[in-house]
Image 1 (cartoon, rainbow, N blue to C red):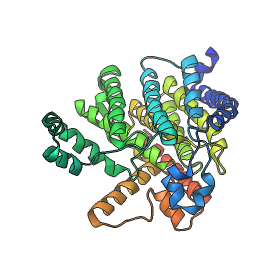
Image 2 (tube, helix red, strand yellow):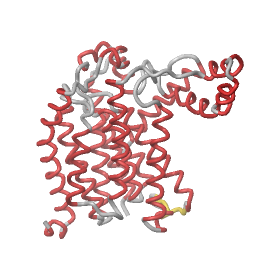
Image 3 (cartoon, rainbow, N blue to C red):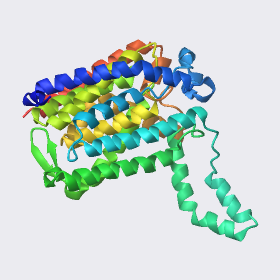
Image 4 (cartoon, rainbow, N blue to C red):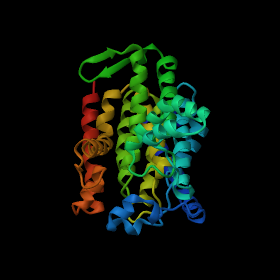
Length: 375
């Protein structure tokens, strides 16, 4: 296969086709496995199904369909593109995020209701509990309880699965791994960020919190956007398409192959995910693909292009943030339901209309970002 690497465009096209074919072969096996293990959406456990009668038919659809994307990328990368400097860490971050998402998916389906003690109850126990050592323990752990309960506002139904504060801690670890790799392993040139039309700006070690935030932000943004059949997959397709073009322009074969592999896997995934979906991405796919998108874009030194390539993801997560602010500060909702795609559903938009328009908007913004990235 050495002849492929003589022409980068040929390489990109080959790996798109190759990974897509692998994913199409794997898809029926994964779908069968998910049905057999009954890893499916349940009406009584899914608030979005309960809140919108149009979504009732989605009950029973297997989740964790993101396994198809993850397994395909792992197979192709481990066989043909596992290079320590370029793909070792992105694949590792994707794997850690997939593990977190997979645990969350399984707990949401099979887990028990988790009890969460409020700060108010903790303070009451400090005053009233008979055991003075237990009271002392509660006093010592108050900062942790405040931290944990603060993040509960990010979820309307934090009773099953991995809780928000637990996700944040694990995502922080993946973000720190990415920052360590980019800042200390890729070279001093990665302490600069590329700026459209203006060259570069030196961030130095401020790059570390920037990288950590970006990885955490987009992992959650893709996760929030995964609510309609085909939505997150189609937006990711244009996002990784833009990254593939960037890697081609940079003449970086390893990132080009990685992006092409993601594109091929997403093509097969979307085929089975468009309405009516045979499976849905689940947290295992959305968290891992959001992290991989952010890591790859950062490693290609295109931080300021990420908002264009992942435009819809940003819109979706900010609709949730605004909803939380409105509800807690003003006591009312800004949207009928958050994120934005559910609000549009409540206004009467069809699922297909929302998905297609979001695809087109993100595709347009991706092309706009590419135009800005041109030398």
